[in-house]
Structure formats: C-alpha cells, structure tokens
Amino acid sequence: MQFATPHPTIVHDPYLEIDCKQFKIIGRTISGVETLIAIPQWSLAFDTGRAPDFAFSMNTVALSHWHLDHSGGLASILGLRCLHTHPPLQIIVPYEKFDESESFLSHLKSISQTEIQYILKTADTPVHIKNDFFIRALPSFHCTPATGYLVSHHKHRLKNEFQGRTEAEIIKAKRQGLSVEEKVVEPLLAYSGDSKWEFFETEAVKARHLIMECSFFSDKSDYEKVRRFGHTHILDWQDHAEKIESETVIMIHTSLRYNREDIETACRKYLPKTLLDRLIILR
Image (cartoon, rainbow, N blue to C red; front, side):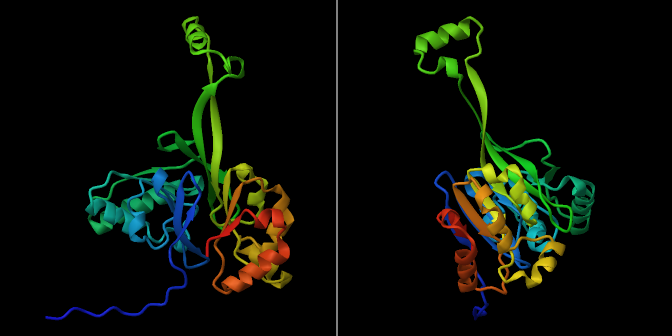
C-alpha cells in the first residue's frame, strides 16, 4: 500500500491575518486571482475567493460582484455547509443582480441534485449578521453591477440629559414613561470590493476600519485602462488621502504584476505619513 506524495504548488500569497482588536480579519486578495475576507467574530465573509476551509463556516457571505475571482468559491461553500449540516447560508448580492443570482442558485441546486440551503438577500436596508451587528450596501463603482458594504454596531446609550444621574433617578424616569435611552449606530467597517476611486466619496471613509482596493501602482500611462476596468490606482489614493478618517486602512486587491517592494515603494512615494501610519497592506 502506498500514499500519494504532495505535489509542490506555487503559492503567490498565503492566507493572511490582521488583528483589529475587536475582531480579526483572515483572507487573501489578489487582483484576478482570489478575493476573500472572513471575519469569524461576525461569522461574515466578504466575497468567496476559492473557498478555503475556514470560509465555509461563515453564516453570511456578502458578494461585492459576480466576477469569478470574488464569487467562484460560492458553490463549494454551499456544498460543504450541506455536508456538515450547517444552517442556510445568508447570501447578500448587489441589488441589480438579485434575479440573476436567484436563477443561478436555483439551477445550481437542480443540476447538482443536492440540498444546498441559502437565503438570498440584498442589503439596501440593513441586514442582521450577528448579535447587534448589521450590514448594508454602499455605492461601488466597478465595470459590472457591484456593491460595497458597511458593517455597523447598533447599540443603545443614555441620553445626554440622563448622563451622570443615579440609578434610582433613571428608574424613576422610566416609571414616569420617559425615554432615557437613544439608539446609536457606529460605523465599524467599510469594504469596497472592486471599485474606482469614487468609493472614497462615500461614507466609507468615516468607518473605524476601511478595506479599500488599490490594484495598480505604475505611472499614469495605464491610468485610462484602470478607469475602464473599474479599479483604483495609487494616484487616486494620493488624491483622496486627506478624506480618509478611518483609524485602520487596509489596502486590498493588489495586482500580481507588482511585488511587495514595488507596492511599498509606490505607497511611500505617493501617500502622506498620516495615512502610512494607519495603512496595512493585505499582501
């Protein structure tokens, strides 16, 4: 009896981790190859990449668009969840692609003759993901219908006029029928998917953590192609750096035509120190 020997494979980038204190990001994102970003604490994945083992346990998948480097792992995730008897997968898709998505998933279930389970939604209104966390769509600007996303924490706090009051005073106010709390929505994490620089013009730049694509790092010679295919250039980051309020900025979707040294050199050349100090490159 024998066992097969491992075949050596070329790994352009391993799956990587980023610790954002409240949560951890696990993923890999290379332009045209694979984009998947999982946040286990929220049981959430942005896009599906090639469906690595850790991804199928996420209960919500938010697809930014249907290009296969972002959506190709969906069938595998659905199959693995079926095998392990997980609950139906909550799949969020761009509003413009809802009907086609529903048709695709229905045909996938039929042609595979499996009992894959899913709940298909759009996020034009907030969608619950876990505990007090909700996700909703943000405008995205790609060459195909696409959407970005914003994860927010919905919580309650005492109104200003009751701050500093004793517990007895607050209880008394409640008994008198007064409203002592107000709802607060804290924007925690924004995700661009594939998008042109116009994503910097949305409320994404006010989220505590921003995940934003930057596919190209060369000079202006290829800029028109960048725009045509719906991506962002390092020069766009330079132009909009001052608008970014996020305390952590994660750069994703870098192209394989650039190595780490190329990317680092371009970032140091074009980006201000105030942004470099907050920047993490997922590469």
